[in-house]
Length: 315
Image (tube, rainbow, N blue to C red; front, side):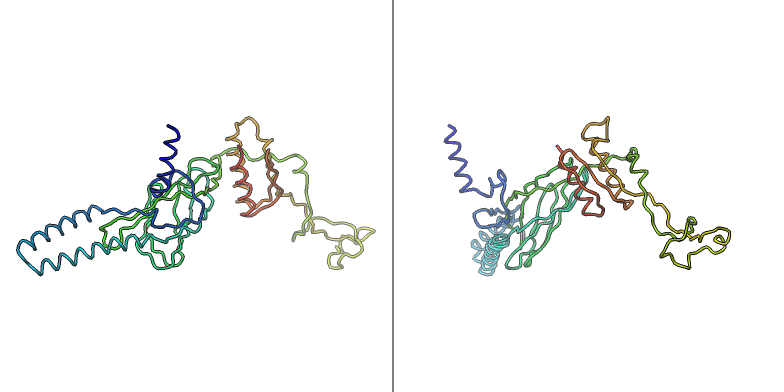
């Protein structure tokens, strides 16, 4: 029995690829061809065909050559429209896919890269309940929004490419399910405490050149004569120099998985994600320690994306 079912499945894969393609993943690029494109009349096409049959019977019954010629012309246009609908999809390629970034619960933008050797008009893409119409001329990018629910890898759902061009009498379609996944970032918590900085980090300071006078100090070789405080030096035995160097607290955040206690893993991830967002908005330098990876100090969009991706990949 199992052997018969396996042979039946293999036969279906060979003979009906467009109907069974969604059962397995496909590698990019994906090219539509005659063995995976199906075409059927639309509701309007069926009604139009019935109308042509009535016109044919009437023109033959009354020997009306003009009506018969019109019926034949409309029938020829119907047949040609079926061929045009098929040729609109035949040879169309999904060359690549690109995805942006999004946190869980918000849609993520995925861009489809369509390519064709000639103009293809009125092509439609159906995916996760939404439909997008476009024309393909050479290379065309189509961006769709995919809903997300949780962090981690999200496999792209199967999608349908179809058209009713040019007269809406026939519908040609093909299903595809590419082997492609997008990484969804964790959702940050809405509110919570600020990160606890280590005591030694709070004491670490550095000097920077300011504009306001900070203090007076003894003259050192190489100091500018313009910075000598002559009036104050007259009251002392040594020369005094105006010092403009002031201590500046370091703006570094050392975010550590081990310092977030009393929470489950998902709550820890949400809190670290919020701290990463706050550090990025404030322009701070920050590092991240996770059980699976330690990320050094950095800042900027690329560093933020690396940290959020590391959080999304945690088990």
